[in-house]
Image (tube, rainbow, N blue to C red; front, side):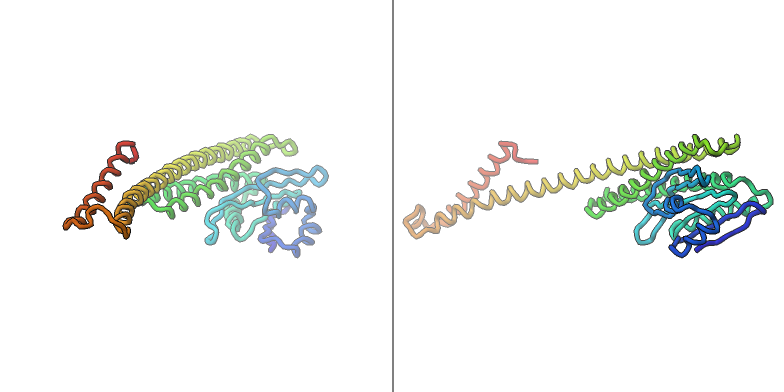
Length: 302
């Protein structure tokens, strides 16, 4: 779906949501978008990057943003900004449609004084970079809640929850790294001469993106260490269980040997003794105690 909004006599905003092949002709014929740039902007597998076409003077910025899918959880997805002459194009999906709303609010707040498209883009990128803070803080709170639960009882299901948080942080780390590379490339972007205010705004975005990257690295490191610690505790608990089972199996083997020996149909000691059964039991108990003593003496314990 394509929505066109005229912001001034020479400045237009074209919002493309959920791009389909039916939108191709309008974008190429009316908005003069090249096939190459359109491919970059609509490829959902693209990571954060900056592209510039010398012939058509088209600039494309692909930025990774935080998304929240109720089915898949919190991840990241790419949003594309494209500058063609005096037209600003944005490419979003259902999961990133909030970026159009965000850009619309920024434009409405400064409706009477239309700024350069990069001013609007930088304002949006600044807010999108800060959204990682909230997402990472949410992950930290979930990790703390999991740790409180595990202090009472350690379960493997909780370890899986930590793994899901760690997976989400991998998406964040990858996106934040590509965003940082994009912003550094934008800072060195030669075709457009940024004003002093725009350079300062870009520096602010870079600081926020780097801070988000550091927060994600710290959160990922903490979750990894917590997950490893609890995995070791579970492994130790399993070792203790196996230790007990091994002791029981060894000790319980002795009565089978003794009773099996005295159960043979041959002449055996204590056959005519009125206390033969009691003596057999005492022999069994004595051998069990001796076995346990030998095991403990040889450090076969926790």
